[in-house]
Image (tube, helix red, strand yellow):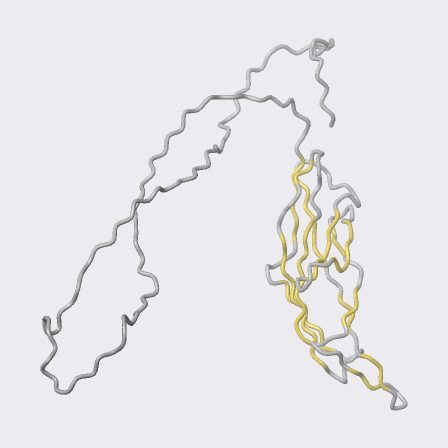
Length: 231
């Protein structure tokens, strides 16, 4: 990338620049979308730095502040949502790639033609609201067994040829003993011990929920439930 110069009235020259405006949209599931609640940021892929950030509007719009570029070429960015810690909202981990292309053009308003490419399609983040719940922990002992096979191998390293004593030079070609075009064979053996680390764990899934509808009342039938869950 290189900095370009645009010519202005009177023959003077000033650095060309481009104003970049990026945007997206926010969808809420399970509850109304709170205004200015979720935060989003534009990350420069080249160095991982944050360029600009913003929050959503109550209508779901994500409009980033304008930022300036002065170098021609291809600029790559990531638009992502800042992950929430705690609370009842599940944030969207999707990262959207954006490519901004600046092409020098003396006829353009500020010296650049600007092309913005949303490489992953429309920038839409979806958040789901999970209502208050009564957490419970279930535990189960599991005996896990896994078969392990060990298949030894042997690789030949760098072959070295060592000269034992001085070379002997003799007249004629019929003095060589041994087997013509023969070869020598030998065996190398090595006892080895193999360590095999195995990391045991488990993944869990839940099945369908089953509901047993019980009593209803206008009185406080929850008075014996002492655990309070914040909404």
